[in-house]
Length: 304
Length: 151
Image (tube, rainbow over all chains, first blue to last red; front, side, top):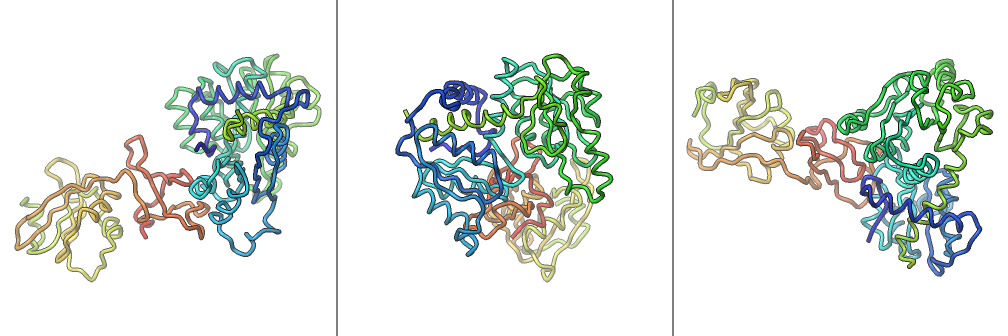
């Protein structure tokens, strides 16, 4: 039985297979076509932490394929508040559904779930750990917008330390043969294990503090949210957040075909004026969660 | 037996752990759970005939098993274990760093699911790069301060 726990469990070819299948899913994801590929199947979405895009796009993906959805978002109305272990919750839920999507605040929760689940588990984020379906939809977006998945310069900007999406994305992009620039304020730099890996692959580009330094050679600017709670001093937060703001002025100094991505939610790290510019791809990126998750669900639940 | 081992009194019964990484003798004691009530000699930064420095432990009236020796290897992968009976080495073996460590260690990441009230056994794998690091099977992080993470 296959689970989706970490993008590192996927070979490059397996990633390409998922992306190819997601392309086939696009008309159904857009509602232009219909499908009953997963008719009669049930997906359990159990979210122990807040989520907007991930949960809704998983549910949409299942519904678009003709299946049904059960689950909860927040633990207030569940037995978890009575002290039920995750192991027991998973044992029980996996008896109700044909696959389980799990978001949990603890690292390794999805891995644990695989030991107690009778059905495939999809990790929708485990603490500061992995979020593989986000990485896959990011790769899908890059390929769709740039026409290829290799030989690109990607500048990751903002909170590279706590932003979980950038860790596995950087590693996946390196495997495909792209160069990664790391632009972060002091204290929010990419963890050493990721930079060491990028260096070992010969894929580490420039490490710097300002997006100005890399914008002219950037194909993809991947912005992340700088969280206010990481800064004890609000003035310092405002200063740093201002330095990392993506605005039309910054983008005017990049190549014509540069694109801006962001895992969302954004606060003010991309100014609203950018939304209307052709470079802005973050809402397409959010939509792409639907076809990519449809591809994964169809592969895992044997809908063919 | 080498002159360096003769610096301290030889033992009649017990275990001599030789070629411990310099400065790691106390971590080895910690990982073995050997209390300071035992009679023992500890040599720190002793000169090694192979060059460099090493630590040596001579613990009286304790015979380490090969399973316990694998605990030594968590701290010092090239240590050698000598079992002494009546003043003679009756058995000698190397501490082999285990590929997988189950149940012995706790993860150093407080937010790891294996540190919560879940019915799972902790599991760590030797890192693939030969750097003698153990990676948590659950949260995929390297264990930090390994000697302090022994149950």
